[in-house]
Structures are given as structure tokens and as C-alpha cells.
Length: 160
Image (cartoon, rainbow, N blue to C red; front, side, top):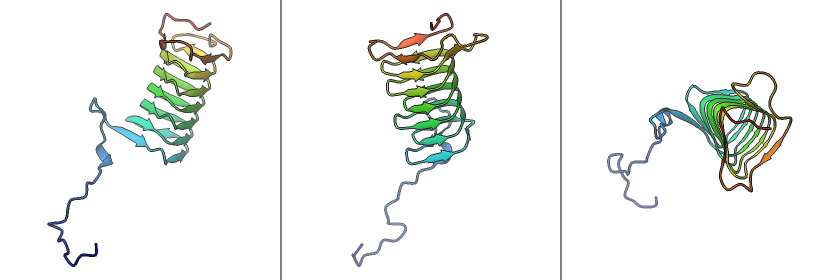
């Protein structure tokens, strides 16, 4: 910086450039990242997989959703699969839904397959996607912190 020697563009060390146009997950699919310092006000629709670490005030619709621990979603979530670790205030609809131990959900849940890790909390109604009519419970609070293994509900399971 204070040297008399000046590097030419050819001798200057290359600065790594990040190319977010083609971010891929381990299975080779493209995904988008909403970083922890990003807040979106409005609905969010993605054709690709989505990783949310920031805040979204609006509905989220995507193929596969991964929500980080510090993330907040205030709106409806619709996804083929969702792995939630943060706070969601709104309804959730997903074929494969995983509620991690740090997740706090306030809203109704519609699912095909449901996994709730010990410590995960849901305050809302549950309804299996194959069920017709009203949800099977009336405003339960699920707190499975004392269980040693995750709670896994499939098509043959009933929440009473």
C-alpha cells in the first residue's frame, strides 16, 4: 500500500470472485440463498430450492425450503419439502416436513410426512394431506423436548 513498487494487473494476486448465478447443492440442483442480513417484504416465489437465513414478511413458495435457526418467516409457506429451524408465523403446507429442535411454528400444518425433532414447537392444527375435512386436532401445542427420538408421522398416523 505504501510501497513504491506497484503491481501490474498481470502480477497482482487474483481476488476470488463469487458467482451466485449458478449455486448448486450437493445433488446438483440450483438453489437461492436469502442471507441473514436480508429482509424481504412481499411474497417470495422460487422455481429452485431456497435457503432462508434472513427475514421474509410474506408468503414463501418453492420446491425445497431450508430455514436457518435465526430466520423469521411471517406468512404462508408452500413447498414440496421443508426443513424448518427458525420461526414461522403462518400456515405451512409441505409433502415432507421436518421441524428441527430450534423451530417455533405458530400456524396450521398440512403435511404428507412429518418429523418433529425433540424441542421443536408447533402451535396450530395438523392435517394430513390425504385427510378430507377438518384438521384432526383443535389448537394443540406440540413440545416434544422430552422425547429421545424424533416424532415421525406418516399416512397411517393420526394426531389426536
